[in-house]
Length: 445
Image (tube, rainbow, N blue to C red; front, side, top):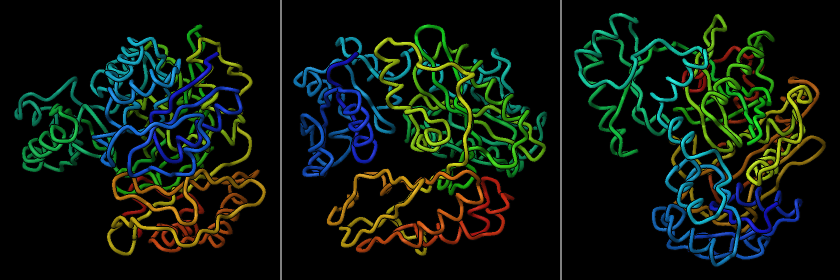
């Protein structure tokens, strides 16, 4: 087992990893930017090193500085968390070339699955359902027009790299396809330095369901069931829950087994998430693999009882999974609400500033993953997420009631937050009855 691990991240996920390591008896080295200097969670690490100015490009994305901190800190492994360098295969390669284990998948698997076209090819080899679309990247507009005519409009133009909705356009006819291809390619090139795009049939009003995976270096690969992430705005998730409501058990099992087949086909190890869209008839289609721990991993932890961060560390250290597939079941219902420093009444404009009052809800089955405290200043340089409020109860109805109570208790002053929107979402009849899809939030609120 590792003696010391460097955490190449910040905020709530850095704190989450520090706590997991402390319980395992592993020392930790934290890194921070000038903007995060003095953050309370840094004091919980054994060491903390400043790696640059506030801007992520000058600190948390600086591979050389992180590697230097790892060497000074005498660590055996690096945990990248999520975001920043978590899915950067070059960073993983550099870590391992320096004899520092990267707590994540093999470089080859990251590269293949990080490109949506090659990931789609792997999925098809593993007999995982894929959305009808182009066989590869679109190199000619006229070819795109021909493919769209064959699969039928509307079609979705998607960037082969990155995520978060960048480089993505819906085209309802030939004219919008021609203009959308150029716009999506330019946006993808700017965001990911890769202009490649491909086509898929646009599935109207789908659900977004993802499967949590874990695989070790001893040939074991398992799923930890699924999460529904359909409550989202502009491809950014707002609410996640497990089990996925109103999903037939045979579809649930088939989807989870498909995700495991894909992981094995890709030679994947460590934690990952296989994402699907589900249409109104419960047909599911592969979207992509997130080759890292997800923001919403606590939902899975609460329904399965598995500490995913600790399991990641064990796998990276060469140990086999501590359980088999038959030992993993879903117990009860867990729901996660992302709380962001944004103003939903003003176009979700970011709201950096100092938290002047903070009262966090509690009680049985309530968990709040966050690094903030009263007096903490939300920086304008990073993601706006304040924290994640997660509840667990025996049934979904009870979990929703618990979340409503928690939202009423939750007090944050000094900045604007998305709690006002959360209150409306959890009281909306269509959410309670789960008559929703990925466009529900934008159509309704």
